[in-house]
Image 1 (tube, rainbow, N blue to C red):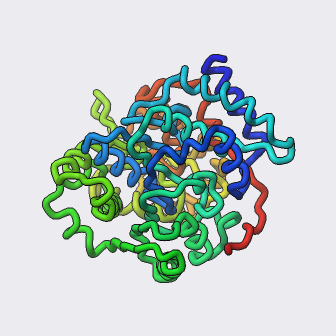
Image 2 (cartoon, rainbow, N blue to C red; image 1 turned 135 degrees about the vertical axis):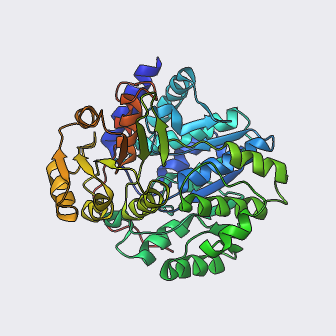
Length: 433
């Protein structure tokens, strides 16, 4: 099997949709030899900032001399981004080998309980990290936490970045219900660190931590300056990234007895962290600038708006916006459209894309004074904005990944972004306890 064939096999697993529950992942991991038992983890959940926090943690521990695995999702361009060791993407050859080795194990599942794409990839990652003898794995949840496939591990520490409304049809329609799902990563006696500030969500996390006898450390916006004092701010723009950095530092502090890290390693890690597609500023030889940000929900859009107003207050920005239908796209439009001097709405390359015309109408209602056009593709929108000096591309990580390819900032992969697609019928989650 070659890499292309392996990707096609993984693509076929999308037919099994997404399921909530750990039974399949536990069974598949056991058949693979329980590789998770050979590894140490920091498990990261939350609504926004998971990827950035993972990137900072990885960079710091790698600077401290550890061999660090990194598991994140979704990928921007290549599937290989999901599984990295010391920020080196897993190779084509290793992806194909792991698929071949897992295929016989999948035959031991009945057809109506076949592992999903994410369950298979989770065990692929565990197997690879164990083979690579990683000293530590930074382990990001996929959806939720309690019943997410990644939750079969017992980490050194759990991290919950924040809680906001998202995926309400699956995780619940209140902050309390969503917090309960995220807090499901908390294990008995295992410390947990959070930057959640919404009182109703934080109360749920505190209650779960008490019940699990898990030491809880909270990080608030007011703590950011003191926590970052003496440490260079990370080169990820946006005030929200300063909070993510403070959360990262608090996690490193909590684990100092398990994994000592020097101040020099902390500084070096934060100075060199790289996480594309999150307030990523790209300057072209022509002087044209692109700001690429995967703000895919209302909280992310508000963070983008704050950074936009603070860092680029005088630029006449063109907004290129594409959002998934299952997000609160009307509110995202209301948040971002007033800042733009020109707006192009586009469909995201996804089965779940909101219509460009719907987005245009919502943007027009929020900012009727500017030119707004619905385009049939991101490529067409970028062509239309080719002479504009400052272009903001946002609304979905899928869209940002496509922009990275079209702008020549990442090699085209022939459609691997489609592997990010998943579907699950909205249904009540199994009860806790």
